[in-house]
Length: 71
Image 1 (cartoon, rainbow, N blue to C red):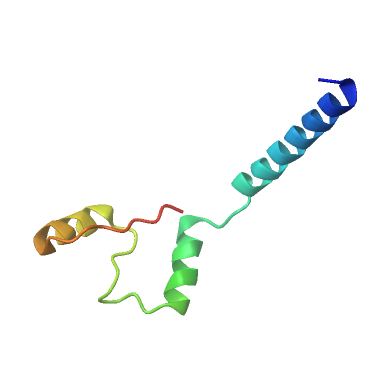
Image 2 (image 1 turned 120 degrees about the vertical axis):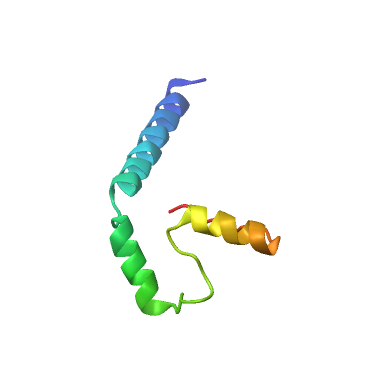
């Protein structure tokens, strides 16, 4: 690979790594996320939020699959 392309590829890789690192370190705590969701969505009776064992138990009782979102 010629040097200009190698430099461009290295610079792009470094830029993408820096962007990914900033996204991983920035964010709300799990409690903040739960508060934001709870304020905007009515969860009572429809979702099991932040309790995986209870969700698994209910899915087994009802014979239904789970949809799990990891944040």
